[in-house]
Length: 226
Image (cartoon, rainbow, N blue to C red):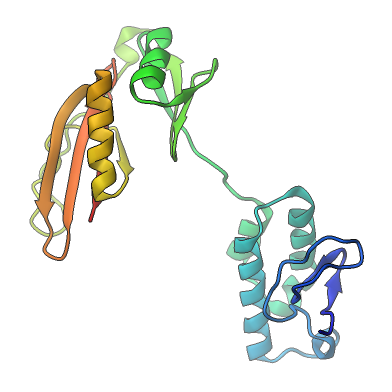
């Protein structure tokens, strides 16, 4: 098998180990073909090269050295490929995670509830995270600063939906069976249930959801379909 082109220490378009012994990442074809390094690129070549760069970004897990080489690659080829600013920006900076800041009346009790009852991993700073759902719990300076959301108006919704049965502060998604499992888990641990599982028939599928409250009345909804 012929080796493909190399850019820095990153080799593309192969399924064997390079000279340094590190396995390459098996793209279907080289990103940079020999004949188009210096020559003019056709529209098709530009499209294919941009597509491969986008595929590379989705494949790599943003490890430090690979990310640096990817950024260098984009910067070196951005002008002739005519990559749009939005795509280049995504390569240079990526949001890894987001946490909702939640003011609570008693930080110690809130951390215990999120950890022991809701199953979140909670650190001493108040970062509470579980399977894609995350909060930053912070002590409120005044009790009046703890303000769960009010119930929204029952209008301006797509189709014929009357709106949520209660106020919502966070909506977490699972699947149909996962929602039931979570409900049973929280119920067994003594969580404050805002409303029990409800099933809505959507025609081609069914949607199930329930919600819990934390000690300050913030409502977390868990929903999913079959």
